[in-house]
Length: 271
Image (cartoon, rainbow, N blue to C red; front, side, top):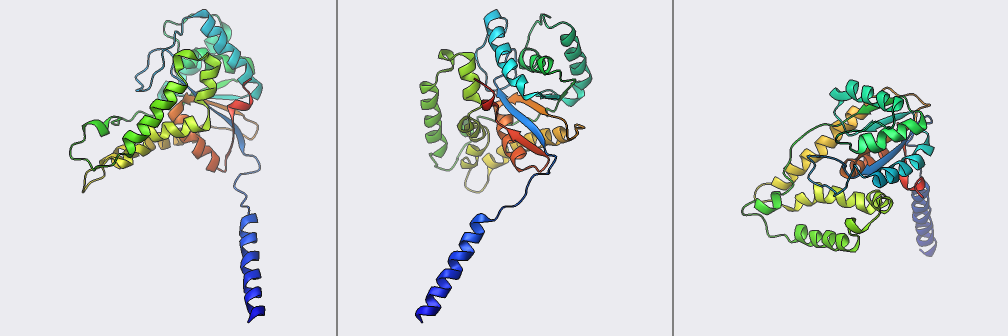
């Protein structure tokens, strides 16, 4: 009986060890490097999450271009931004105009003109594309849904977010500090939570209103990823992907699982 017991134990242990060492090759050999970058929206934006920032300030522009110079060492060949695909012709024209005149003054510059264009100019990237998709959803469903279930998760998580905002106040941070914070993995996870997943705790007894609303955010980002996949690329391309943080967070997961792309962290390029 002892021999049977030890044999069974050894076989179970060996099977467990084998399972732990199993590795599935999940990337193509020619997977394309992608630098997936989160930025806050500069200039006028309809986005619900905004940051106070003077995009006309010369010192702010210098700091942005300093970051752009560091990101350009990634040597991207393609720049992808949060703009609608139907604007791609005009976007490409604006970009080519910027390449000819980097000192051009914009009436309402955003992260595309201030950061994406400069990254592209410094790295000699020839192509730029927008992949955005618009879809409305209700960020504040929790606050006006009647007869919702008594679940404190949403408010308790909100308290954690508030505490983090007090610990890392945006108005006390330099652009570099804020940029690095926006690209921290925990920050990106938090953005998916507050913009989608936390809504799954918001519902009435017989319905799933929060999940239905969160699904719109997932759908928007899936369509954006589909738009991204429509871009013609080759094995020698290197892509910089610059969007608002919530989209970056979703793409962090999409890119990690995709066999076609090999994501890299922007934090390893930022001093």
